[in-house]
Length: 587
Ligand code: ADP
Ligand code: MG
Image (cartoon, rainbow, N blue to C red; front, side, top):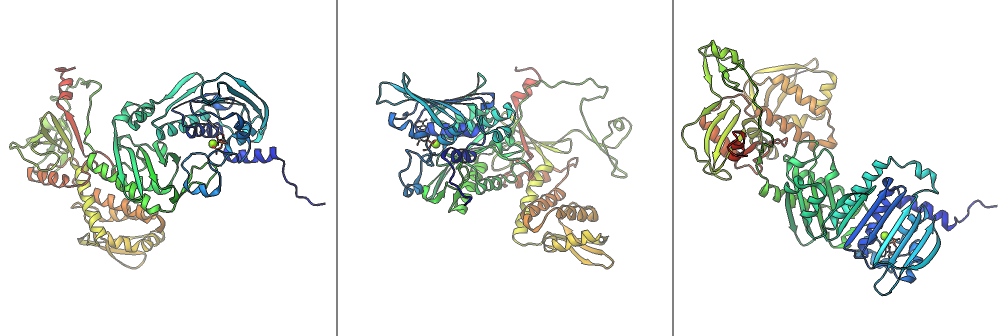
């Protein structure tokens, strides 16, 4: 006797449910998407115990017609497409006709629905995929679906559920994303009786972002807008300061559908490169509109992953949309003193002064405040004042250059604020741009060493150097083998005078070791950052006025003068009012 049998409908549904219904959040996603397809303007989601025991989704959409109620729970039954030809131009969120059948197969469902054509509504009860009853009831127009005891008949799947709070977190995540993608719909999420999401539904994306992430985030986003023949992109990206250590605050929507997409996230990363710190990810809510025939959304049952036929165009569009907005809008970080400064009692003559003392004989630099009282050495007061006003052209025109503070920060005064510029961060940005440009143009980046250095390397080091040889030469090292596992270095990349060439070489070799040819572009960026850092003026370095002016002029020609290449701010703004608050002139 043969071994193959055709599975019964119930088993087929349970297997299919495994693909669509992974956890409470996936049920919520499918039900809310159905509400959106039903043209609801208000959707309310209520969950208990992370959605495991109870999920209720209520909408004010068109409702389900009496004749359709039973069939809606059958597999591959949908009102959204009629034949495969329509698959190429789908604008509705659903089309597979699987969700209700799949959810019903693994839970107990109560559905109440009402359309505008009938004076009465209908109530249906479905248990483990079997319709128990359908009867008339009074109900407002729209649909309400209660899903109870998820996975009660599939213990294996039930076991994989996480703690209630974790499952609730997943639900809240998906509801937030759907709310962001649909600013015209008022979306509400109630968890164990407490409202945790409540968007206005007024069509305005910014107010939706604010209602989900709070006022601080709402105040720190930049609008983006882009259009070409192929696609349209609208949305908001966050100022670098609200970047996160993960991608949780990046939401991408394609023709209204929440998606995940590698080309889009790479474009976001690339556009934000050198604006945000390494290992941080920018805030972004992007609405991409594209001709549906250029996208395949039928790649995955949850329809979350999509395939574009025009990957590179999407990448380019997203990249430029963000880049343009960042260079036009990226603001100087403003300091607010929420808390009054607390002055500590001290025996030192002037509070907080960290003077640098340069001994005339030997040039030794000391930060020891005690020495102030006993030495005749030249003393830099914390503010090295430049008496003349200096006019500096582009963003900060007519600013008065006040001086250098702690031999580290450049102080400018303009209108009713002061600007503090971190001289190292600012110069690092300038050097980085220059070095990168030279690198890309294959220009030499070497400085000859007066005395060549001989370095003994380990076998491992030699292998790394061999692998990255071209790169080391391109960034400015000139070296030859010197026998017995050693090399002689005759030139190093630009850098500060007096740089320890050996340490520098070994440091870069160390960085190179953790990279392979596959992530070469990361290695290049990383080494260029490093060279820029070494080449830039340091903190605690007294600068002459001309040097400061030169630095500021160069800084202001940068496309992004506001952060160093690692994303730290170069310029901060302190409004006069904040100083007045410190002195209690204003509250
Ligand atoms: P799909 O969304 O892929 O069409 P579903 O199984 O999710 O498949 O839903 C089946 C059908 O039930 C839908 O095509 C739609 O006609 C109807 N339906 C489901 N939920 C709703 C709702 N909230 N409002 C109106 N109609 C709904
Ligand atoms: Mg659906």
